[in-house]
Amino acid sequence: MSFEMDNIRKKSKQELFKELSKKYDQIRKIRFDMANNQVKNVKEIRGLKKDIARTLTSLRERDINGK
Image (tube, rainbow, N blue to C red; front, side, top):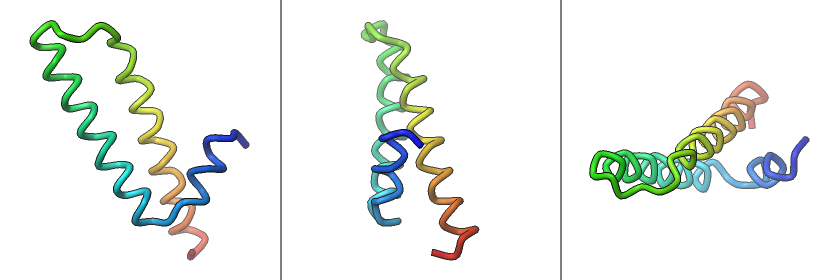
């Protein structure tokens, strides 16, 4: 288990949903900035998508385990 997943698993569902919302907003902002040629690090989207996937995985694990 990675350190990041441990941190995600310790958070409450509400905190995870807030974090998901922030990550989606960040991706949206970066995409708009890309359209305006203002982005220097386009690989940042990849990291955000991975963070979203980790968070969704944790939420799904909780649903399956009944927490």
